[in-house]
Length: 611
Ligand SMILES: [Zn+2]
Image (cartoon, rainbow, N blue to C red; front, side, top):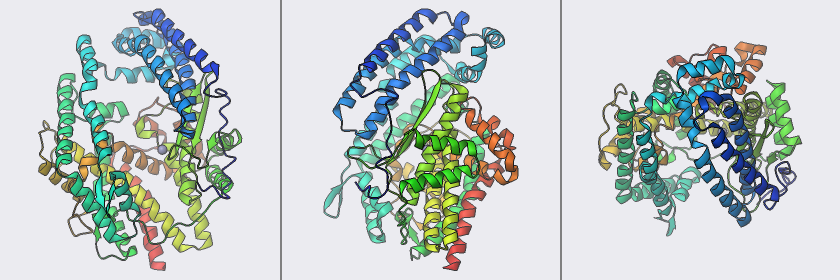
């Protein structure tokens, strides 16, 4: 609890615009009103969408805003002290009532919307302004129309779903949390041991931690994990056939609004261009760590020169404002509002949720708002986190105002655009300051920290994705799909090591891979098929966009603001067209890697030559 001299004590949220406290009677009044509106929604529109779609959408948006107001208030409140039982109890009570009402009164809407015939919708698009405006939202819901099964089958599947692969993944998380492994005469959790890997300055200790992890994950946990992945891939294969999806990734790509060709181009570019750069960087890292060769346990090792910067909070805001202001007065204005209207909560306090996040919503009256949560300790990294979360914040404010509650939220694959962009702008701003001070060591710490993070987002996640693609039946050349097979622990170990080496080099080239074969077993993201490539996608897309600024000059800002305002109304190809970027081309992704990763690796080489 070290807030000394950081000036964060005054940086607290003002939540009085929502309610005066968890015991405010208005919460229950709002909840009763919400349930009544949902019931009326059901009575007014069930079975009648073909005549009343516009009015139904208007009412649904209203319901959405009113529900968000209650939930977001309680969520924000809970973040400030997760141990406070009054908030927890209120949250549980509200959730129970709202989810029952939602289940009873709202589920018909999606089903009936998808079932509407095209001619009816065309008529609406031509004659009803509300429906016309929500066309992208409606069309996205209907993308899945050809893949729906008959109503009784869908109902049965949905009733069965708590007992399918989802329950395996839930149980997986529980079992994993129970893992205790012997280390230095104590018992450690997996999280604690992974923490040793990223924070220990001692190579021998890191190697020992990895050995304990890998050995501990072998045995029954690996068998259990292999079976859980078989359930995931098997269930997916059956549904793919029955629902008529082209391949196992088709459903995820459709829900991300990303054409298959774009996904393929991303994977190819990362393997061809980012892989060699990763190897080049880790060779430099070995030198910086004073090591001949790296073991896999050294990949995330901290550098010997630590970042000891302490930035007071008002200085952090000033830096982020200046960084945003350097390319967009509009965004700087929005950032200024966050601070002025008490929508940032920064100090480390007792019982607080860990980490950082942004929550953006549209409140009743079509009023967009957004809150930033931090655990601010004053490192350069914390300044970039502030810039990242404010990026989400300005994205939410712009999209909320432009699109309203139903279309404000950008799809996963480009939800990180404004945040990564803001972080990158601030990173370059901090870098310039250190360059002016001629502080080569602090510069090296800043840049290597950024490269480590970038490689874990881009190369590591594509490695995961390749493993996952093989699991679901793709061949070793990533060309064709076959039915997934039941794979033994040994087979999975072999695929895992092969997919790592494709990117990080053969054994002994940069890394040696002892005690790395079972590390696939604890990656819980594999239970949400094809989720991981989205991380690499978002990062590289934003880096490409970021690099367009000099080329577009003054024309950049208005185009960028339009992109943020589009919320969920465009797919990735439409989104990037104004910037003359085409993500279906492999060179789009290669350029994204060059302008970010390659440029930073080059800087590290230059700095090392200087030192
Ligand atoms: Zn983010």
